[in-house]
Image 1 (spheres, rainbow over the protein chains, first blue to last red):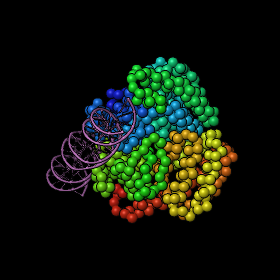
Image 2 (image 1 turned 135 degrees about the vertical axis):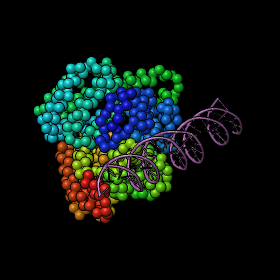
Image 3 (image 1 turned 90 degrees about the vertical axis):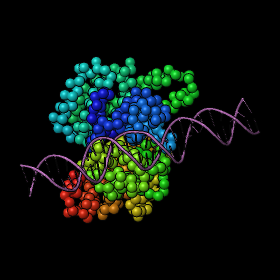
Image 4 (image 1 turned 135 degrees about the horizontal axis):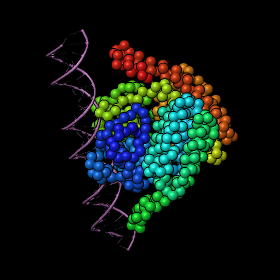
Length: 257
Length: 257
DNA sequence: GAACGCAATAGTGTCGACACTTTCTTGACG
DNA sequence: CGTCAAGAAAGTGTCGACACTATTGCGTTC
């Protein structure tokens, strides 16, 4: 979990994270970003074993920063580590996905309620303005932008809860489901329901209607889950299809997704 | 976040964590446990800069496993990393403590509700039996045992929610506030209110009274916060007292706690 | 032809070394 | 007497190498 001193080069939507910790754009940090990108974009496939030497070669750095990055990613749940066998891309099962979304729902609803209690009017107005500033062009943006703006909206609610731990948790969750959300946004099933949801949530916020707002949020999140599940299936098919009948090992990996 | 292949040697209460990831008792893992222990026991003082070379010497390993451990601890919020300056013990302010307890309350209440919905009767009975098995001797145990049993109780609720993410989150939170809780347990203000709380929570659980149980939990957690704050102040005083007037640097550190 | 074991290979875990950055010390200067 | 600067010391970030473990491939035996 790290705030990035943006390099400008790789432009996936940044996320404000775990306050005090800062890193510069050194090898370790670059490795972290690059590997996470590979994971998010399915370049490293779920269940796959990660070869440190290979990675270090392709990134042009030694194994040390690679391992540091992988350790961080392990702490954040992207990969898992088996002693003497190495790091593996963690396969996010449909079940695991539901668990993550459930957690997200819990955090966000709580954040919303706290925001209603604690935020002053100018804060709530900030939320309203944030949304109004992007709502008009929201649908026409490229996926990455939509995603960043959507995450920004939800993160702002977390910030206005006044509890930085909630922001950190939500950031971490966002990072882990980002690749799924990205897929979902590009999927035909993605429609503008999200937009009306957000508008309703903002409305509840300015009225400080905690209960209703939390309910809307919960529904908003639950709504995306089923759509996302379908999108996920399609995406996995797409990822594993090209070299499908090739070997049995790969087949086996598909199964445990 | 890691499940430990218990070495038996250092016996602080283990915590079941982030499922898939496993580590053996290699240097890196030992370093992680040892350093976390140092942090938890205030041997490494808040705000202090961590000297990797010194640590590596005292643990008898090279800096590599030390750095891996510190990176993990950074992801978990124990320490922070400033580029080219190193790792620092993260100072847990009173405010930060409240935030963490608030998060814990959110997670636990949600877990309780989910447990009421999803757990079958034998699960709930397991919770009841867990508590009944320890309630009689609860108060007479040494602090570490009390702490472990208490964490176990709350973790079991999280497990019975059926969402492993909640277990992971709670484990992580527990780890971060453990040293505080330990202090609180040893503090004179610690009384048996906890025991009656737990009993009432179990009662609500077997009745599947989600609302009431969540309320009890919330109160249970809030109750400990104020007591803990006092205990924290005393502890910090104790920690920084010995070499208090020594230099100004250290004084400055006390201030930002 | 299949199962087993052994050798060869690939890969992780840890180490010591070195380059570069930050911090401390010392001494000159105003 | 305090301020600043240059050099020395300490410390981090990264590297390549090596030891040890897991995996793969091959040959042997039944």
